[in-house]
Image (cartoon, rainbow, N blue to C red; front, side):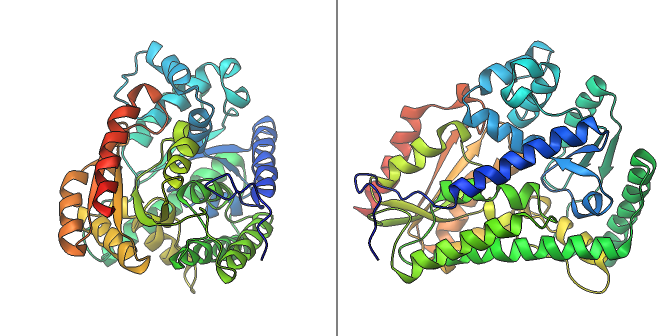
Amino acid sequence: MVDNEDTNKAYRRLKTSQLLQRVMFRYMLEGHAASEEGNLAYVTSGFPVEIPVAMGVTPTYPEQYGAVVGSQKVGPMICGFAEEMGYSQELCSYARSGIGSVKNPGASPLEGLPRPQALLACNNICGTVLRWYDAVAEITGAPVFLLDTPPMEGEQLPHHREYVKKGLDELVAFLSKTFKTALEEIKLREVAALSSKAIDLWTQSLEACKAIPSPLNCADRFLTMAPVVSMRGTEHILEFYEKLLEEVKTRVSNGIGAIRDEKIRLLWDNIPPWFQIFKFFNGLAKRGVVFPADTYTHAWSGSIRGGNLYDSIADIYSNVYLNKGLDAKIDKMCELIEDYRLDGFVMFSVRSCKRYSIGQLVSKEVVTERTGIPGVVIEGDMVDSRLFNDAQIQTRVDALLEMFI
């Protein structure tokens, strides 16, 4: 197969990128339209969005908006709006950018987040989300609902599942009262089926990266994950994931990698630095470094199936590995390292995402002990570029790469 792209570039752009842009533009327009119609809810990334979608409520994701703020390199300014209100720079930069944009939408990308009519939080990813949404509620007047998923160690116990399922009942009651709507089982099954199909297509694209060379790099996956995070349960994203999978399979069958000269395969742990996403990963691509797997994009992999959908939802959204002990994440890293035949790993210690970053120094030692491969911890932030030291990070990454020369 002839590769007609500019061969001077160390990486290959996905042809499906243009379709992704159209899908995400639609997402933005639908959010603003829903807000004007009084039908918009903010949701956290770990929220069982299939339920509000089945009830006709349009979700939008402030965390995803934080990624936009970061990618447009205005994190310090938007986070600064929240800091001017008294919020500490130590607070999650997703939270600060979300609060700041709601407070000052005119100065924010895309005219800020659309105004919500409800705020739906699930604490399976962290506890900050509740206080973050409380702060937004003070500005907007929108009511807050928390789906509580207590932390787990090991397998989910029956009483734990029942507790979460009761929370799902309370969610339905909250949405019914707030939006004057109802949940029909047939609609929930339809939405769950669409969600599961999108996740299956996404998972196949991730697993294709076991091939050598890997058809996708880290930046590719961080961008193409957006629809399955923000629009799962809708039919129109299936076309995108079908075309993405087709492109990925074509690359694999023709031996075409995401980067042109794959030499070193690494695992990435944590959220990326959105303001550096191309510079960082494509800079390493020039040195033959590819990231076939990461812990972040593999988090969206659970499909809602079975006779009792509430059981399935309670299981999937409770078993997010951020809601489990450190061993669960270590196990996941070791599994990815083996399955994707990786040579080393990079752990990004995100200053403002403490739930994801806590324990990384310990994890690094345990993962190396169990797998025999080296790793490095670098420090920075996902949105706030004031907390990112290029020189320091480069020095640490260089030290890791020297082990493979």
